[in-house]
Image 1: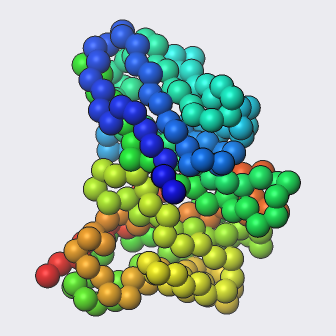
Image 2: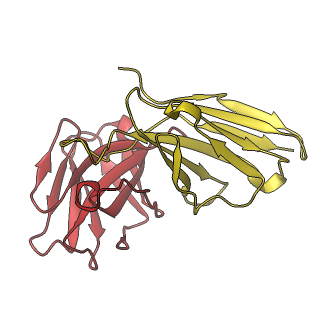
Length: 119
Length: 115
């Protein structure tokens, strides 16, 4: 079974440009999460999708960040316009939990991350 | 979710058991203890989780005290590849709330395995 995949693995852009990160969760996982780690700081939650709906977006830093999960499969996280402080590693995670299915766990499995550098 | 406290760093000789402690004195009855690790700059890796009973899988063992206020992750035979930052996270069980939820990462314990 394929794990969570993320694209690109690295992105270097200039301040003011736009970048779109993509996450493909494990097949069949309803829950998709975005996290990020900026230099020297802890890993921080950004938002959580249940299928195509945003369950919790309390961690989104500002309106320059836009996340989508059309069709409830893969997700994109767009940063527009990018600022220097957006540099960091962006992680995606997925979990199978569905309240209507017994036995599902909420264990989250992470992708390898996208390293974003804004110059 | 309850707060956790971990030592910032630990060393372990290769081949020996690594015992990583975690305090979670404010844990509530519906909260699980999860352990993840991050090797270098890779994505966090799930290790194990438990509610109140000790748990073991192919990676590690989790020992939770009877009062559930602390736990220990045990890597029985540490190797150089186990060098990583280990995170102890407490969170409410999704099957009890009906809703999956985020992970709240702290600073973790940096485990250095040496020859």
